Image 1 (cartoon, rainbow, N blue to C red):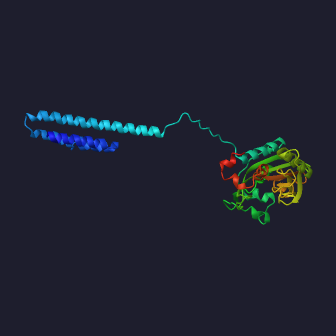
Image 2 (cartoon, helix red, strand yellow):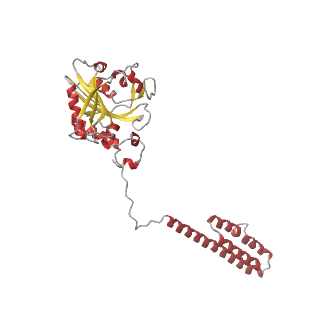
Image 3 (cartoon, rainbow, N blue to C red):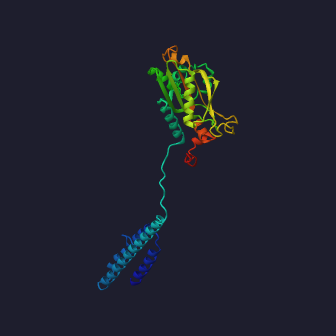
Length: 339
C-alpha cells in the first residue's frame, strides 16, 4: 500500500501542476478526493489490514489526502492570480497619457440657419408658429387655390396616409390655419419639415425644410412685400445685398414673383455658383390671392396681404457655399462639425 500511496501522490501532483483552469482542478478533486476517488478507495481498503498496520496506513492516507487538497488549493489560487493579473494588464490605464476630451453636441446647421432666419424675421415683427406635419387636402391644397385638377398638384401629390391625409408638401397650410382662427393685422412665419416625392440628387430631397411668411392687413401693397424682403436679406446676408423681383406663378398669390438676391459668393461679380449672373434665386413670393381670403372667410376687398416661402436648405447652401443637399442628411460628423 505504501507504493500505491506514493504513486497516487506523484500522479496527483503532476496532474494538478498541469491543470490550466478551475474546471480542470475541480475534475481532479473529484478524481482523487471524491466519494469514488482514488484516495477514498484507499481509505476503504484499511479494513483489510491487520490491527497493527491499520493506524500507520491510516495516517499516511490522511496525510496524502491533506497534501492533495493543499496542492489543489494552491494551484487554484495561482490560477486566480494569473487570471487577475491578465485582466489588470488588459484594463491597464496609462495615467501619463493626456485625458480624452469630452465631445459636446451642437445644433445641426439646418437648425442654426432656421433659427437665424426666424430671429431676423421675428425682429421685424413676425410671430413664429408651428403646425401639423400631417395635413388634410383642404389646408394643403384647396384653401390655397390648388384644386384637384390643378397642374400644380402634380409635384405635390406625394406621401398620403389616407384618401384625404398626407405629409404636408409645404408650410403654406399654416397661412390657412392662422387666417381661419385670427383676424388681421397678422404677421406670421411658419418654419417646419415638409415632404415631396422628389428624386434624390444634389439639389433635391424627399424631405426638406421650409419657412412660410405672410403679412395681412388693410391696404397692404406689393411695395410692402419688396421692402420687407429687401430688409430681410440685408440683415441676413449683409447691407450691400440687393434683391431682384421677376414675375412668376404660384396658385396662392397674384401677382407672384421670383425673388433673387446678390450672390453671396461673388458679391454680384459672377461666378459658377450663380451661373455668372451675379444673382441667386432664393424664394417665391407675391400678394395673397383673393380666393385664399375667400376660403378662410375674409373679404379680399377689405383686407390684403403678401406671402413668401423659402427653403431652409437652399438658404444654408447659399450662405455656406454647400453644393450638395444630401450632405445635410448623411450624418457625416466631419461635415457637420464645420458649422
